[in-house]
Length: 201
Image (cartoon, rainbow, N blue to C red; front, side, top):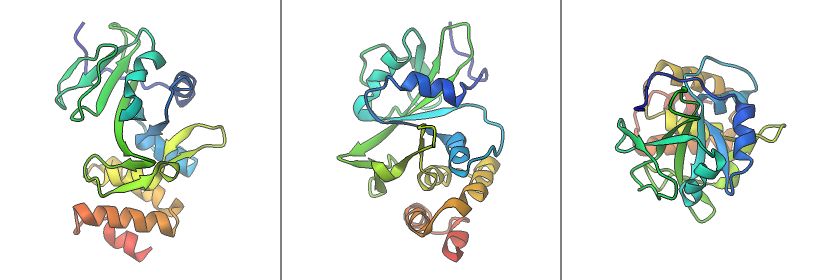
């Protein structure tokens, strides 16, 4: 059955954590939910739940979600079935996941790049951070993308929800995180609206 792009029922973080406990490599909650885990409170509603993995072990997602349908965004904006064992090209970094053809999408899998011990931005390989700093954990042991890295992703958009997340996360960023985020944004967009607040803070 062809997918229905608008039909989403995001999986709760607890369900995701139980499933990805089987993943052989690093994984983390991403997107707006990661910002909420960083600030320790709910900020807004979410249309989906994003989970990040490294490209080095992305094929293991089929074992993490046995029996599920996984559809690759290839090219972005066009979904196709992702078959077990297929190594996705570097142009594919987004996979939609659902238990079967009759159910809603539950997880959006984001495939990130790395080099040695570093997380590396797919937009600009000069933007990088040791994976141990790019991923944090909640007290319950749930890994999530560090807020400065998630905000770097969000800085490329101009959506109201991204400004909401920026406003919520800025107070929890320490000086090193703010400096990293400011430098990363400046590389791509020296006139970005967030920069004056990052410089002031």
